[in-house]
Length: 120
Length: 343
Image (cartoon, rainbow over all chains, first blue to last red; front, side, top):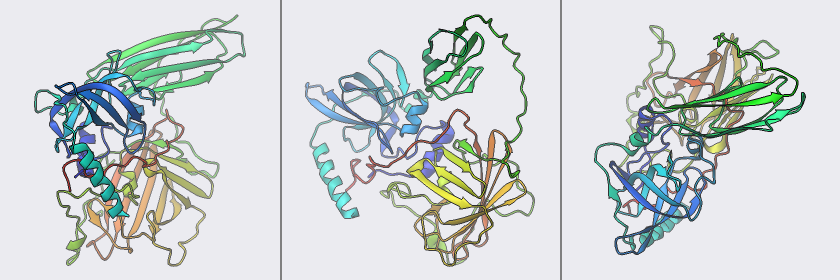
């Protein structure tokens, strides 16, 4: 189950200011993973924004990945707006994937279609 | 209601686990992705002024867009948000310079010039650091109005005087049950998006805004859109206020320090890992030792829980680049959904 220990979030903030508002204990942050796919939809919402990504597995089958991002105030501070990511965009996300094995990740950075990298 | 949330969550989890996730590319172990992201360089995506040439008295719109910044300023305007635009009416030909800094010693700079017909460019004044006076309201009190950023733990301002109250809580004998002990699958204090209460609403990484009026002061917290309207007209607490998440607060001035006394809390919040009872009493002292800083101190008292009152201190930086905090509605809270291997 998703944990939400604020003490850890505070520790993260001290390490990297304005990084997260909740724990990443449910994600494997020690082994960063990168995944690429096509944006199906982008939820510009609090307490977290989400991207749903159509990812092809090694058999060519589509799998929908859920990519969790920070809260909107953090994203805005990195230069995001609600149209930074759009359906159909080919993007690459780097972050920690769910320890449960579910197709889910919290992304710390994204590579957008034009190649620029943005904190997330 | 909670049972319904969990039932919905279980269905979601079933649907998700039926899929075979594609194997993501693994990167070298040991480095947090946030540390990787923390090295991304800053860049200016756009900086422009329209129109670039005007007659005296006409206005222009300056707009800018930066990514991955840690600081952004436009000379001669001052600090600005990462993206924005501003309407300006320069009286003479003026050059505006956007300067950004970011991680890994990255920086970028770009200039635009507005030509005001019939005028010559104003010489750029030498950069002189002048200590600004603390603004004051008509009644002479310091004016705290403004948007303030997150104050990390440990940024406590001056060291407390000898003999002052402890900065860590000590439980009174027999009150051990109030210390929060979480099971590994407990979603924690913030998972439900319920109000953190006072003083904990100051300790989340979101901005706060103070709006000061002659007889009341409003403290608004971006996190969960919470606010308090605190009277400063000398009134006392109402008798036996209903227990509430944010308490009943009254304020008064002691010199240049605003002292907020609050009672009437419910027992549903935590303070630094301790629950409390409805007898919680918080005294907050807020001052503005300089223009850029809000000094915050909360004395926490609950005779049912703590052996003595104790104090939490924080320093919040003024964010002059913002006029207001944002809306924050917890509409997409997925923390009850056991997507991550739970039941």
